[in-house]
Amino acid sequence: MQIGSMKRPERVAVIGVGILGSSVGWNLTRHGVKVVFIDSGQPGEGVTNWSFSWVNASNKTARKSYFDLNVASMAAYRELARIIGPDSWWYPHGHLRWADDPAAEAKLLETAELLASWDYRVEVRTGAEVRRRLEPALALPDEVPVVFYPDEAWVHGRHLVSRLVGLAVAAGAEHRFGTDVRDIGARGDGAIQTVVLSDGSCLDVDVVVNAAGPSASHVAGLVARHLPMRWEPGAVTRIDCAQVPVHRPMHAPHIEIRPDGDTSVALHSREIDALIDAGEDPAELARLLRESARRVVPELGNSRITQTRVSNRPIPADGFPSVGAVPSVPGYYEAVTHSGITLGPIIGRLLAAEILRGKRDQMLADFRPERFFP
Image 1 (tube, rainbow, N blue to C red):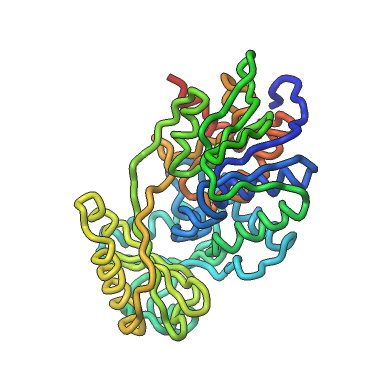
Image 2 (cartoon, one colour):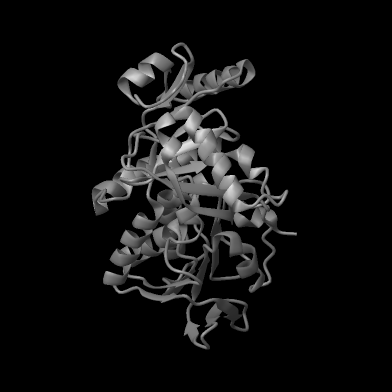
């Protein structure tokens, strides 16, 4: 579907330089568009750096179109690794999941069966097989069923963002890091014209991409756009290890664990996230996460907590992405979603095509921003 007769943009401001913003900007610069990256912090150091960073579609079964979008982005990741090189950001070693009570286990196996019917690769193994062939450091019962998704991965988000921004800048992109957006100006016909920054500068642009993550609702408000967002904070803790004892991300009972480089492991738990609004201190959240992880991987018992961050996830109100043009504000586009790590490559590619050619891809039909119009 085309949006009228689109004029090729001369200068695009990308607000928010996490995985989504860097992906959109890099794709635009590949087609010769002048891009200026804007971020109040440094690229990739916001929620992108404090995500569980798990690339998957196995957790995306609520809507088939959402599952399909995630599968497409997993394929886009493999293509991206071929184009720019996997470097230190791409870890395609699969994902493990198991449960410790009958109801949760039944649900897990039911989901695996559904995914297999959708042609998603899934294997069910025993705990003994997993220890013998995949993760010898795990403490789990021999007979417990463990679901293995071999096509899933994890991504070092900050490293990938740095790589994409570096490539874009080498191709002519500009950047304004450590700078807030104060205003977005429009012409008499309502089309985007300027972006005013906190350092007093004013940029002439004809397109704005709102990829501002948790701040996306505020940026939308600068163009009189209502973007409802959830309040859903999460805590991620990093712990140091002399040698990382696990090789892939996993959802164990009560805890999520993944490698985070050569000497670090990242931890997260939805159960522990529930303590955030009760006012629990982040240091106590980190201790609880490490204690839960130690029960699954005993070698983590002597690890040292190095960093903990509580971040609000960038989730539109209905839980699904908001991606594409907002017809009432010519030149304004959104790229806002939870699961930005998984969806970054496909959203970057599809949104760049829409900005360049007005091409509204059918894959994004269920995730258009206009569904939030009052």
